[in-house]
Image (cartoon, rainbow, N blue to C red; front, side, top):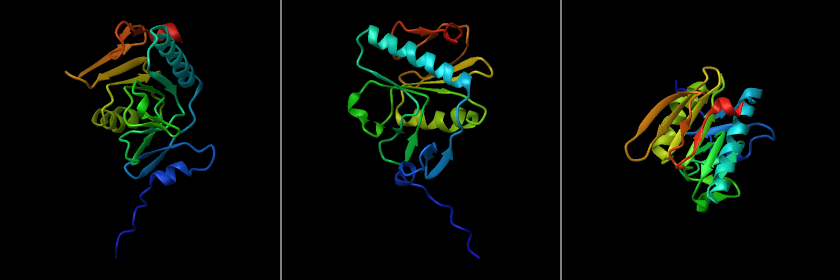
Length: 180
């Protein structure tokens, strides 16, 4: 007897989700997204504000976009993610649907339901797609794991009390404990 076929989801399925339902499409599978809690949203909001203010103060050309915002990671319609913060410096990647290709910097704020995806699946996808910098902010452990995927790759772990250097922006450091 043949095994039942597993359904393969497409961009069309992703874009036709019922109103209010959020999910991410990764390699033909839809992954439901739980609503974020208060601390998640507080961290996301404060980080977005700090990064956006820095970019504006430098008259930078990068866009700093908080979730929900669709990222067509490889610009091929097979991976649609909604990072908590996307920093896109190539405006040609922006469309009405979101970002078509890898953002320069992605920040994910971990929640209990997203931990495995953020630390493994998304880490691999972001690295191989050409994201330059990736941060995983973990409010439960009060740490930030940073990854630089350009040149000599680098990974570091910082506490919320550390001044965390931003690789893609010279001179910008962020101390999470000052934000929340």
